[in-house]
Length: 118
Image (cartoon, rainbow, N blue to C red):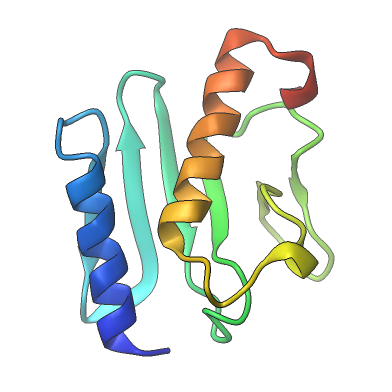
């Protein structure tokens, strides 16, 4: 994975949410984990870059774990994560901002009690 791409994606996230609603944190020397915290909803979002990123989507984990049909342990994994997009719908043209926006939408719908989010 290209370091320049990840650095640009981090910068885009920080620019997009500079109002303070979301705190972006990332270490350019250790890109295996990247995190956000949404204090207004009480969820911590952690996105991890798989080895094959950007060919595959980043994995998204929430804490506390929501009770939803979209949050479960995937095949060959030990930890539950959010299914925000089917892997066949992912394209290398998409980026971390897409994953985070989909996650924020899920959290907003989940918090509002939207039936499809549960």
